[in-house]
Image (tube, rainbow, N blue to C red; front, side):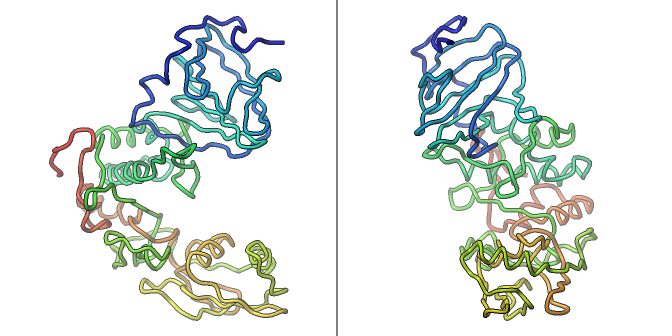
Amino acid sequence: MRNFMLCGLTLLFCSSTLSQSYATSDIRVLLDNGIATVNIIFSTKHRGFVDGILKFDATSGLEWQLEALESRLYVDNENIGQSITFQPIGSLINWRGQKYRGAIQFVAVGEKIRVINRLDLEQYLRGVVPAEMQGNWPLEALKAQAVASRSYALARLNPQGDYDVCGTIQCQVYRGVSVEHNRSDRAIRETNGMVLMHQGEIAVTYYHSDSGGTVASSAEVWGVFEPYLVSKSDVGTYTPHRNWQFRIDPSRVTTALRGIGSDIGSVSSLQVLEYSESGRVSQLKISGSDGSLVLKGQVLNKIVRGWGMKSTRFVLLDGLTAQGDGWGHGVGMSQYGAKQLAQSGYKYSEILRFYYPGTRLTNVRSPGTPEE
């Protein structure tokens, strides 16, 4: 049986705390949540931190097998602590077919393991910006995306939690090294440290693909008012997400409603009862064989998008056919709108002012840097 504290490794600085690379500019990205076991191989040198304390320096590659039991991690049946962080030296992390920069952390939560990528914020953005906006789009649009993504991430830092953001559309799409692009890298470098601030706080800079012609407010979509996330007419632009039609699958609607504890039998039709200020459905009546239900607010947005609808900016052509415009929740910056503004000669700072009125562009790494 392998001895965790020996296992053929050169042990150094066993009382040291987590290294300086884990500075305040680091971010923790959730890659997997609740897997039963972990099997990870490092082909080169790597360091290991157990519960934040440096425990070993591996002078060669190793394979690690981890299991969780009662919120404790076990290696070869030995309880090593609640979390272990591996920091490769001179190489990337390989996890489920993807490559990532930084370090990878495994946290025991009950009988499952939470997988987290820890890395420098600017390196993280290299895997976000081209995943959210095509790398061949205008540079000023990519810069606006870089600032929006950086601001969103910093506003979501959660020191009390195991992680700060997820890597999916529920937060920001993050795909690691595979999507890195020289143009988005340039946009990140040229906006290094730039964020949007509002009344002394980093703004939560939501964004989406296409507003459908009118940007939505945070109040109408999520019920929380932010003065810089307001409804307004968007810039005119061509996108592939206009005038779409969608045939709603009644069985999918039935399943979704049961998932929130509502069973109205076999769904037969939908009826829009009310629209929001930006032209999005704000109240939707669903009728079934055993009754009806009215959806509104965050539940409405989540359920409707879960059916496969591009947005809630739609009208019903009949009881189960929708015709709509846009893609996404519609709050904050429209990425296609940013592209159009950049093509029209607008700088990234002007694009950001248009979509986040009342915010101020600030360099958090070099306080006092003037905005463009």
